Image 1 (cartoon, one colour):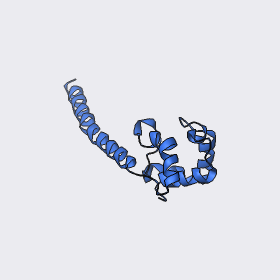
Image 2: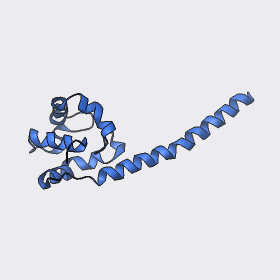
Image 3: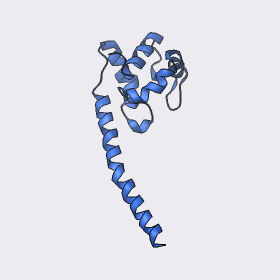
Image 4: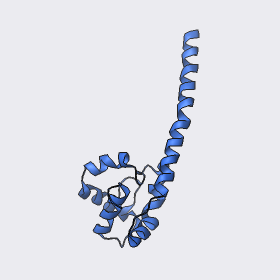
Length: 119
């Protein structure tokens, strides 16, 4: 019985000790994502209006802008699959990502920018 209590205490300290580091990594990734902007002014305007509010907040579950690790499995599916997800909506993302006037080319450029594959 004493050994079980000791293990529970050790486990609690391990979990508590690890949590702040993960939170600081997440916070740092969010800050880094907020600093990124497409080089093209028109694309930056679309990004700020339609993408930024979700893709700079880890709690939304969307991959953060510039987080290549989070984007890679999605990019591996191919740009056509990602475009389909944008156009039809996916998970918490509404159809067209709330950019009803965006073209497929603009969506592709935004995806590549957020995935860190182009500025």
